[in-house]
Structure formats: C-alpha cells, structure tokens
Length: 247
Length: 283
Ligand SMILES: Nc1ncnc2c1ncn2[C@@H]1O[C@H](COP(=O)(O)OP(=O)(O)O)[C@@H](O)[C@H]1O
Ligand SMILES: [Mg+2]
Image 1 (cartoon, each protein chain N blue to C red):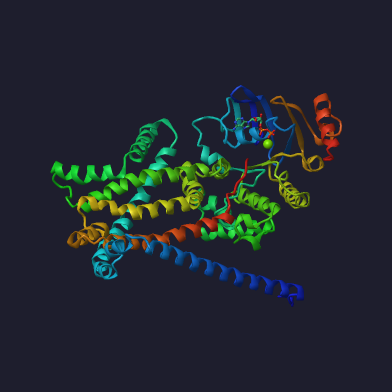
Image 2 (cartoon, helix red, strand yellow; image 1 turned 135 degrees about the vertical axis):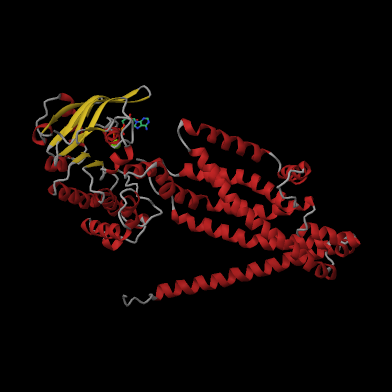
C-alpha cells in the first residue's frame, strides 16, 4: 500500500478547473517530483494534500486513512505532514528557535526543555544553530528557507511537501537548500516536491509527474520523463525550460 | 575587533557634519526667537490684549487654581487608566468575535458588527448623557449611582467600538500565508489566532491604538458634564468665583502636558516599526 494515494481529485476555483480527476501514488521513502507550467496546479495539489484546501471530489489517503473525509481531524492530519512554502512563511515575531518549537510545544505537547533540545538539534542539522536566537528578517533567504524546513521536520512528519522551495532564492543560495534536500532524501524521508530545478529533479526523483490541464499527463522515472518524454506536451514544456537555461 | 582607524577623508567628513549640525541648530534657535518675539509684540500691541491677559493669563490666579485643577486631573487620569484596560479587553473581544467563521457564530458576528456600527455612530456626548442621566433615573436597585462610573462606562462603550475596528484591521492585515503556515503545522484555529495572528496584529496596530488613547485622555474631560469634579469641572467651579478664565487655561495646559508623553511614545513605536516590517509574502 502506498503512503500517499491520490484518487480522482478535483479542485476548482469558481469556473477555473485546476485539478480534474488527479491520480498519483507516493510510496514510503519515495521522492516524487511534480513539474508543469506555472499555474498548472502544483501548489494547489500540495495544499489539498495538506488540507489547506478542501477537494471538490476524489479521495486522498495517507497511510490508508481517507484524509479528505470531512469527519477526519484535520489538525491532527496536518501535524503529521510537513509543508515548506516558496516564500518560507516563517513567523516574523518569533525567533528561529521559537518558530521551530511552536508546534512541538503547542500541538504535540512536548515539554519546553525537550522541545528546545530537539529544535537545536534540528537547527544544527540544517546548519543554523548560531542563528537560533535571531528573528527571521535577520536571515538570508537561504537561511530562512532552511529554518522553515527545520520547522517542518521537527514534527517528524510522515510526508514532506516542498513547494518550489528554491525559486525565491538568489542563485548562489539555491545550492545550500538543495544540499539539505539531498540529505533528507538520503535519510529516506518521503517527499512530494514541486520544482523548476530540472537537474536536481533528475538527480533525486524516484518518479517525475508532469501536470497538464489538471491531470498527471506523464508519470515515470526521471530518466524517461525528463530525457525521453512520450507526450508532445511534456517535450514542449521541457524545451521551454531548456531555452530558459534551467536544465 | 579590527584595528580600523578612520581615514583622513572620513575624519574631515565627520568634522564637516558636526559643523553643519551646529550651524543648523543656531539657525533654528535664532529664527524661533525672532518669530516668538514678533508674535508677542504683535499680539501685545492689540487694543484688547491687556483685558485678555487679565482674564485668561493671570499668573497669580492660575497659580492659585492649580492645586484644585490638578486634583481634578488626577480623577481624569484614574478614569482614563481604568477605561483603557476595559477598552482593550472589550475591543479585542469584539474584534475576535467578528473574525469567527462558521454558522454557529453568526449571532456573535452580527452582534459585534451591530455594536461597532451603533457606538461609532453615536456622538460620545450623547452616550454620556444617556448613561449618566438616563440609567440612574431608572432607579434600578443594585446599580451604582455615581456619575463617574456611568461616564466611564460611556467612554468604554464608545471607545471599544473604535478599538475593535483597529484590532480587526490588524488581524486582517496578517497575510493569509501566515495562517496557512500555522495551520500546516497542526495548530488549531484558536492556537493560530493566539500564537501567530494576534501577536503580529497587535504589534502592527500599536501606533493607531496609542493614538486612540491620546484621544481618550482628552475625552475623559467630557464626563464633567455629569457634574463629576474632574479637571475641567474643577476649573469651571474656580472660574465661577470671579469670572477669571485662567483656570481653564491651566486645565488645558495640564491636558496637553498629559498627552505629550503618550504622543511621543506613539511616534517612537511607529518609527521602530518601520524596520520591523510585515513578514510573510504571498504563498
Ligand atoms: N486561492 C485561490 N483562489 C482562486 N484561484 C486560485 C487560488 N489558488 C490558486 N488558484 C488558481 O489555480 C491555478 C493553479 O495555481 P497553482 O496551484 O498555484 O499553480 P502552480 O503552483 O502550478 O503554479 C491558477 O490558475 C491559480 O490562479
Ligand atoms: Mg506554485
């Protein structure tokens, strides 16, 4: 059984059909990369999985439980899924350390000193212990994004969702964040990632999924989807990316 | 750490800046003195001035009235402090009521909206009259009769509707991505409001909030119409003795002196927020 199973998910915003019967499976320990044009619904899909959006139809199962059931405890489900946003979304009034310990203390009931120790360990892992007492706006973009990743990871999520986590960063800061994601992959953390970094996708993905018109138009190993796509639409998208110098 | 010494160029620049600061200070001082002298000479030479000075700016009379007026002001200060606390609590409650989602809370949302509409629309003086003269006239048992309490209640009712709107604007100014980030970590609606939204909202509305309290300080003088002996009423009683209006001027000066620290604090908070910034861009 897959860790995450998306079946026939539909999501519309008014007349705009963003996801139209979307199917995708993510196995335990797998790293799945979503690619597709801007506006193709990648962020919407991640937000549906994290229950930040309510689906209009279809089922999303996490670990065999239907999380789209309106009777499900949304807060508990969310606390088991980590999401990292393109714009970091750190809490500006809290220090980096307090950003990381907020959920463990308030949601998971971890004791303050234990949460602090765990958070410092996690910040050490993302290379930010010295910045534990700093406020987010005293950090560089790359540091903020690593703090946001630590904030999500400290809850030991079953699944990590990463939404274009490098696209707001200056080019020389992209590397430090991608290195961190490589480590997560090596640790066997299950990840569903949206990215425009095609070379990174080819390197870490177990499976690549190309979104088009609200459906997974082409799904397969990166060697096939990125190097030898069957679908003309995929080829078109990739050639546009190549022209912009991202592959 | 490093053994940096300012270069000759930098030393020269600093000296230039210092000279310029001194020069600006001199110019500001001289022009102020000149202007004040002109104004005094101008007003002093008008035919009515001696009479005005006698009725409004009689130093001896002012000095004599100061203790009574200051005693009245002490009541204003106490009313102001107690009301400020109640206003913050009530205003925050109303603002949170208006942000509640879900059909269960419809009556609460409606109530909060109606409340702010009514009390922002009613002139404060009218509310003071209605409560201060109306409620005691009902002769309900168990309710206090002191005018100062009803005057204070009128201030609380009116000001909390303003403050509620200030808080609500602050809550709504926190970007939705902050809420999304909090909810994604598993925080409930309440926890998100308490730990993520409200702290940012309150920080952001500090300047307008303090501004409302500057205004409250002055308006606490309106309860004088109920016969409460505050600074204004005390001044009025003093004037009634000899028709010299200097006590009013004294009361005015005291009110200004009272609000200046709060006004400066407001400026300082607003300036400090300049670099504090918003936080949280689009998702
Ligand atoms: N909250 C929203 N309200 C209305 N439309 C939205 C909202 N969020 C996303 N959309 C629309 O959904 C489509 C997909 O957006 P998104 O999932 O952000 O695409 P991607 O992440 O692939 O660039 C876009 O057309 C966008 O305008
Ligand atoms: Mg997106």
